[in-house]
Image 1 (cartoon, helix red, strand yellow):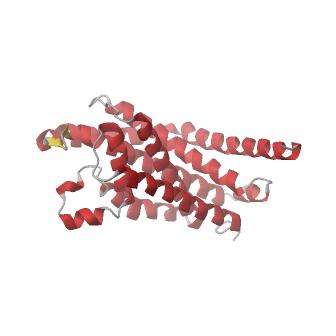
Image 2 (tube, rainbow, N blue to C red; image 1 turned 180 degrees about the vertical axis):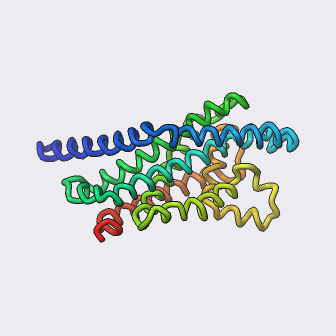
Image 3 (cartoon, helix red, strand yellow; image 1 turned 135 degrees about the vertical axis):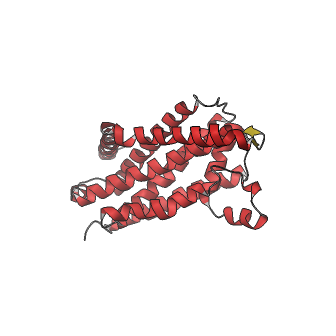
Length: 263
């Protein structure tokens, strides 16, 4: 490896870690707004859906209802926070015109994209950990497939962090960054098998539900923890890898062309 190549990789690593550190410091500095509310919200879900309503529902797929919904609630918190961190942070960078400094700096678009994306992944995993620890007050989690659980939660947070980046690129006002989470992300999450098994649905709606990518992610994560799933795990894993590849390619192309940033 030549000296020039070594210098390039070293400078890229410094730029990457700097962006990630900035992102992590950003959401940890305002933790009452970024980390505390999701924990409180999920605690309410555990109390209302788990203890109060769950006791009347009984078992689902051989598990107590609260045990069944815990993986879905953890995944829901990971999805929303991975997405919201990147979309709000990158749009703020655009709004403040500081993105122009990154665009003219000798930094690869890959480094910029990975820095913001992993910042979103860090927040998603942090909130997911908080919700997981909180769930231990209401149920006992026994992870059946630890490796699969880690892979699924990482790729899921990566998918939605990239999705948040694309949303931020095209957003022109602060109102635009809430359209996708409100009208797309939230409905897909609630219809993604978080609170129910799709086996309860009529056959037609079971097939329609398979179009929802969040259903596959939630079920893959539930399989990692409980060992039960409504869909083939292999399909879910392939789907997540494909989504990461496609969304990363689109995000990189948008960043390379300066779309939404050089206007």
